[in-house]
Image (cartoon, rainbow, N blue to C red; front, side, top):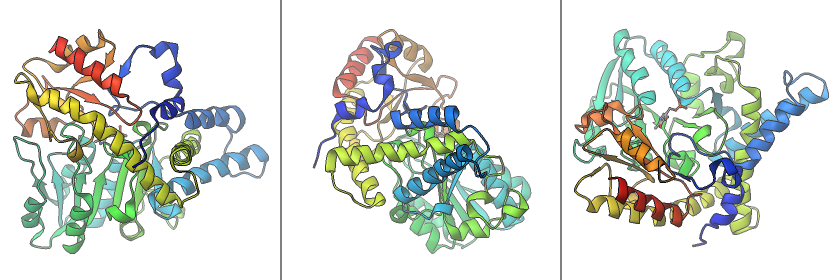
Length: 409
Ligand SMILES: Cc1ncc(COP(=O)(O)O)c(C=O)c1O
């Protein structure tokens, strides 16, 4: 297996060369990642040279539209979906909000939806509110000790064939365990339901391969995935056509516009092509050659994962050994993302502040995962300390985080 060249990776992120961030080890990536150079360059170029209404017949506008189209085409190809199956929106929370309005009209007070208590609130509250419109909500619950979401528990929830939509996370932003998305989507499909997967916590660790995952809707946030502040949704044609359009009526025939009622942020949409540039640069540097986009995405995913898993295990071992912290989620790196939350005997934010004194940027709080924390018996007001990293993190930074934790805990 080709190892990830971390020096090459870090050279693609201006933040690592910034004097303002020198000496700081970044462990709040699940809140928002650093932005890669191609995204920044595209964003600046757009604002300098193309900041006009796109798709008009003059050069700056044509270039603006072409760059927005390029972002759509290349990201869709990386994910293995059609161009119009990709929607941009202001954020994942805004995207699920719009989807929920569509589902409310579609179900018209009939049928049931499965939600979990492992999800971030963005893929939970909007669905639960549909109960007020007569939709039956069924909660798929985590194990209160481990935070594990067991697919076996879904069987009973789907048994009567009334469920129309199953909403769940690829990976929770506090539990970190990677859920078997393909298996769960297949279960939903077999029961006549669509699937809606929150991939926000997982996508930074590998771009979604939608054909393999089999999701009907997959959401993630580009600003946590080396890009600008955009929400990205992959909506397959079947569910996209079934749900009532939420945009202008005359745009309803265009799937890419059906669930984006707000005018898009042109510059940020265009800059998203820089994410594809980055994946291609990683692929070219490590593998050379010219594979199809989906294959490039898969190969880069593998690179990121093996690096992250190798760095993660010592941190998990350190935390699992201590009896003054409660590690949430699996203690085996292969089973989880490097988004590591621990419950403590004191407010987590104060510990994050103490870590900041050691040059460790981490967070403490509920991370909008109030339901999972409560389900695991953790007071959201006290919160959890979370250290989250990605593939650009080095072994030395993880060692430094462990040393700092040893001093502040
Ligand atoms: C797992 C998860 N889902 C959804 C969201 C919401 O994403 P956005 O900020 O794009 O609305 C977050 C944000 O932290 C998250 O961590």
